[in-house]
Length: 376
Image 1 (cartoon, rainbow, N blue to C red):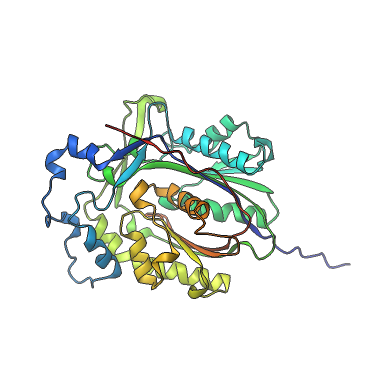
Image 2 (tube, rainbow, N blue to C red):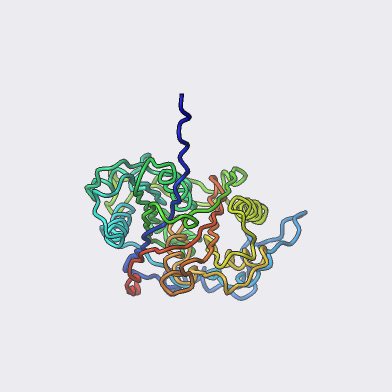
């Protein structure tokens, strides 16, 4: 009996990447006009959440956070928001269509769609089927729930499909619709924005694409976000109700405690898996959930700030859309080039902390998102 041939895994990576942003921009003036007492806070009047935690040593996170505590907007400057008739599905479909076109493909060429949304348009079910229906894509589809880390988890799933030879081309979408889930009067509303990204994963030349990854669960953060439903006055969602997001008062204390060890464990694991050193990495992309997150990662890892890019001042926290939008901007502006080693790090509360090392290859890029219009 002959020995069956053992097939080597294929190299898999991103081959097309796009970013899509809603037209409307809310600046800080939007909240100053509507909530003047809250946002006229005097310098030095730091939010209660920033109070020291007894028994917790001062960390890189605390040091970088200090610069923003006198700012009532905590470093947020602008953010995009959806308009009438827009939803998580419309954002994802727009990004998906652009990614397919950028890749030189048709919807029929896509074997699998993997979607992530913060939050889906319908309570209790993801957006994947609705996106695929709009695209008229014939391959399989499913939704990934990994909170703010959905796009990176989707990249790992897509790469595994292609590497194993199960799929040839996987399309991943990441849509964030925070403005519908967080009431504008809620304190965290100015810290968040809406947007979407999409990418195609397919076979790439050996030595390129995903080289190594490491993930760990973030169960210690469970309970920091409170999810329920509320009436949807926009008429966007079926059934007239939408997912509503609020935060538990101790949320910042929890994240101050777990961010740094999670970062180090994920990054160290991904570097080992890729058989590279930190100093070998040419560029870093971090999921900047707050204004000081990227500076914190830079300080904690001891890397050169010039080797990363921070989109937070432009878009605020876009959850699962942050990583593809950041990658797209870095590549489009020439900060990330072919042959570069790039380390991507994402943190998903109540989900997982993940780092991945990629060798950047020939990636087709969608256009720069158009300039927006400021909401009065």
